[in-house]
Length: 202
Image (tube, rainbow, N blue to C red):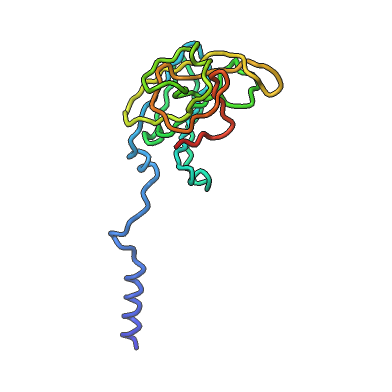
């Protein structure tokens, strides 16, 4: 009896001791450090104090309908000396939208959003303010990059828009050189793209 009890105890002890080769959860900070990252700098004239926030939401129509889209947001950063820089996981540039809040904006009821492409434009086409204000559709979704460093010029200009209760100062924001983009193309008013919710890119 003693031998059987001792053998059983030894077996239980062997089962309870963790194996040296057992997998352990990866440290989240190690995972973050291992991800490829992109330093993304936006340059913009006459927009000191403008606040930018990046969002990445990439999914299919089925995923969006089921509420399963992986949504990522950056911290808000402020334009200083004509530029603002973010360092983000490279994969988060895919399906990225850019929300902009200018110091002059009144109660618009939406967040001004960067237009990566307007209707009628192809990747690489130049866009002026005079052209932008004539547009009726735009994409808030960037196709993204694999580069480690990107400098992206953008245009942000004060315009009059219909606010919550009256006409107020608002902003139009777009890239002066049309970028690679993702659907959907959304309706805009005089070139102004505004968002009240996350832009889910497809």
